[in-house]
Image (cartoon, rainbow, N blue to C red; front, side):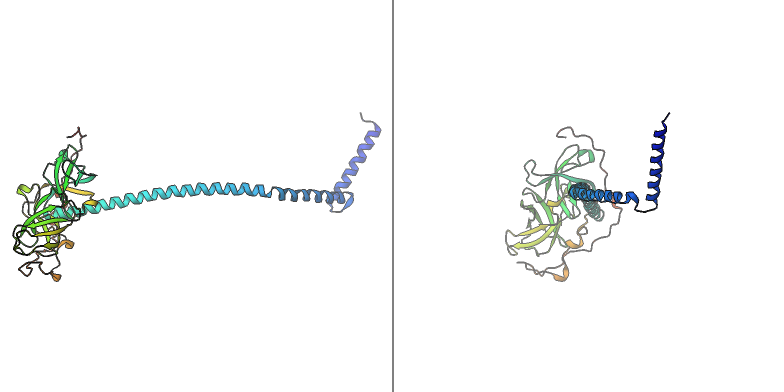
Length: 335
């Protein structure tokens, strides 16, 4: 039990506390107003000092956090950009292959060539030839030696070696290459030889009196059974002629239609046309413009017919001219 004195002290303290609380709630200054104001000033000052002292630290921390977030965003954007570039490159590559195949199908349809589509997988010398490419179609796909190889622009070369899944193609530009050729629109024939230069071929006429003009297009004359060269394949355009009509040696320089440095999709001709397509396979850009007939160089004639015939419209479904490659069996060495 509390003593009487203790109870009196507690009662006084309770009354005093209630009094101070009531005065504080009423907003009056009261006995604690000065003390409360003094405490607020002290605490406020300390808060301002602390804010001034720690502001650079908190600012640096916030800056570092922002920098890390920005670095992560930059890395994410770089990764997305790289992915988009890769997708764009793939799309461009796919479009280029599709365009090349479309051009090849036009040649096949107009000329009635049956072919196996293939893609160039390697470039470089092989056997005794300097200008060769390797394609991803071989014996398992019906490809054999001495078959013509073409693309949408014309003659690429012919097959010189096969394995079960690949074939080596000697390009028309190889110095060992020789192709029987005919001047489009005429019966003048000769031999086109490779020079080892991807942009130049030599054409030697069999008839030294033949009328040859700059701009004349050349097509393949055609080998027996269509091997190694099927008839009617565009070869190139004459860009210059050396010698005059009647000279024993009369050679024309020819710019090939096919750019062998950019080969991708090609076709191996597995069946030549039933009839010679003559000049019908020549594209519009490969034909001589008769409205600007160039004068003969050293010739005795006046130029005559250029033989450029309008580009034929495909008469048969291109899909029927393509032999689908057989399932590729793993190569067993040299095939």
